[in-house]
Image 1: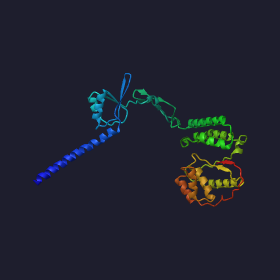
Image 2 (image 1 turned 90 degrees about the vertical axis):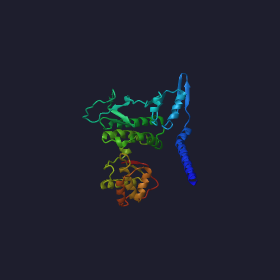
Image 3 (image 1 turned 120 degrees about the vertical axis):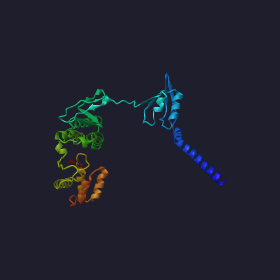
Image 4 (image 1 turned 90 degrees about the horizontal axis):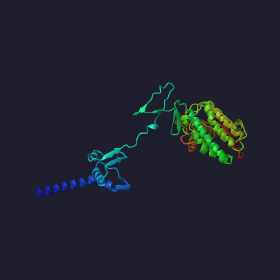
Length: 340
């Protein structure tokens, strides 16, 4: 008698588990159907459309019933594949997928190199047209890879915007011209400059013409020659490397002379991107003026994010200052500018 009762209880437990597992397997599809809107039929004149969500293999039978209910014989799939279309095709329903055709007209072949044989290529049955230059992400790349066309284009855009500022803004004060130049003109001269930065003097002169034109717009500087407006020093050294001792000496001597003669003047220093060599020289000046190297680096990075690489950081850490730039600044000073 006891054995029969135990057997009955075991059978009941097994049946209960089967029922629970069955409901658990149906729960995801049921929840999905509850969260997704029902199919909607759109009719206009002699056109009928059925807008529905994408089914899965578990809900494919319900999807097939909806298609038969509305009399749909063609299904256009414009999303990722989530079900097998074979059951639909067996019921005479055509499934269309990947309707977006590859635009071969926008494909171009860019032949690089001087001795390139310039072979012709094709996609399927159509030949691809060759092009001497193509623009990608706003950068013009030509077949010579010298980026000269990109430099000319950047200078042309910057000069055009600068002319627009000159025609539309009446004020010529420094407080008005410099913010407009920094916001509207300078980005065109610095966009992806790491890729197309000038390496020859004629290319540098092309970009500097825009900068000189901007300086001439400022009241008080328009009648001065370039030598009277700016003093330009050329002290190049390897990119990503610390400066040689000779350049450090010349740099500190220049700053000592400039700030003693004209306290409060502005000395500008630039490299290609303004993230390596230029910030290192400024950090050296701050360290020589009494600032700790950690504070100098943090101070510069707050103004110029990403400045000073690890190799230059090690150099600044080992640098021993001689306090060569510790002097008092009078309250009365003029605003002059020196560009390095």
